[in-house]
Amino acid sequence: MQKPRIDSRRARESFPAGVRRLKVGPNPDLCLDPAMTLPIDFPHISRPHLLQLLRDAPKAELHIHIEGSLEPELIFELARRNGVALPYASVDALRQAYAFTNLQSFLDVYYAGASVLITEDDFDAMAWAYFRRAAHDNVVHTEIFFDPQTHTARGIDMGVVIRGLDRAARRAESELGLSVRLILCFLRHLSEDDALATLAAAMPYRDRFIGVGLDSSEMGHPPGKFERVFARAREAGLHLVAHAGEEGPPAYIRAALDVLKVQRIDHGVRCVEDPELVARLARERMPLTVCPLSNVKLRVFDGLDRHNIPALLAAGLCVTVNSDDPAYFGGYVNDNFVQLFESLPQLTARDAYALLRNSFDAAFVDDEDKALWTEELDSVFAAHEP
Ligand code: HPA
Ligand code: ZN
Image (cartoon, rainbow, N blue to C red; front, top):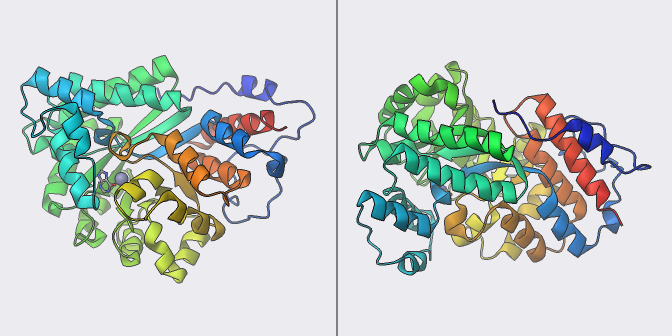
């Protein structure tokens, strides 16, 4: 299961003659060595070409809450089917509620939307809709977050959630050629004991998810609150990630690294307030899964043109671009890429390549898969040269 769709032979054949190929395989220096020479003629890629390249390029999505992919139309369809009353009269009324002032104002609406998910088929339908949309954006690998406590607290069985998502994931792999992994997130506004019980309830399905994460209201819920449950997940061989430095201070990023021992930071944009932390993130090549449209919708930045991605890249950080909650924040991953580059003319073709390449380097997959996708990425960039 979970094989990438890239055919390495086809990727090799599609590489234009005369263009020197990049060394394949993950390059641990990519984020650290901005002067690295690449055979792609980055300066001559025009802006319109670059936007099309961003759409066409294969990419991994590493920060997507599957409940945040639930579009209003599907929310209303599931509510009708399941007899769930919604506090919104119509799809339009629900959409009008998507005017957020901060993370909490979004989470209130997001948890209300997730309340329509009852059966295995509902979880399958939600995930399948996202996978189709992701494949349309040339996502070849996706690591989806899911929030079991949002559902188990309503009496939904853990098995219903995981089996439904897993069924859609296997279908996406066989019908769309999409590589899918699941990451179970703990809600940080709840207790660590609740998280421990959640992990225990999920262990019968250990082979269906690859890691654990930490999401929901950040302020007042520092990573240290979840030290024991992350230690237990680590003992179980699970990958570890955590939201930190979205609304919370740099100290939360440090705690996620030092106490939880995470392998990626979700968001992390507030690291810039702590230059020593930035230096450490660069040195350790710690990936940041950044979500530009989310950051604007939740008022972390005043506009995409004020986003700090250029500064993060200039500092040598391993930044990736992701959609977070695409149904709520106005766009899927390609919308995030394209709108970001439209808003920030200082971002170059080389930056585009680095962001895409980082998505594979930071993924929880083996080196062989990374090499195949990197090869495909290179051939798409090379084919777009003028
Ligand atoms: N931040 C924290 N928790 C979340 C988010 C987010 O952007 N989306 C869904 N849960
Ligand atoms: Zn998130």
